[in-house]
Length: 71
Picture 1 (cartoon, one colour):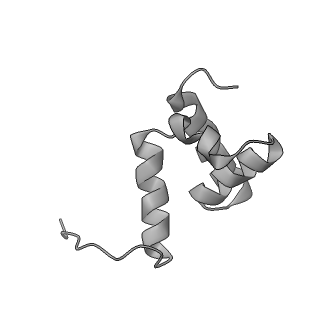
Picture 2: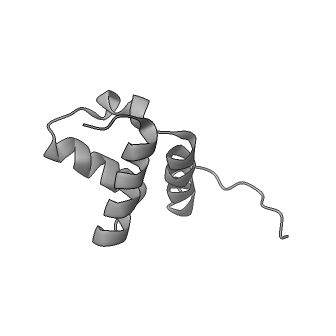
């Protein structure tokens, strides 16, 4: 088990790199392997991981696109 949300986020990012899957798939894969419901790990998802999951969902058109500034 993870001590805090940052450790969980680092673990999920490692899984994403190694298995080449989306962030949400990595979270769901973790839940499946550990016999957990996604709601059980919701407290372990920090702002950074939440933003990355949201970005994946926007790329897959599950959420509406937002205007972005070209800087």
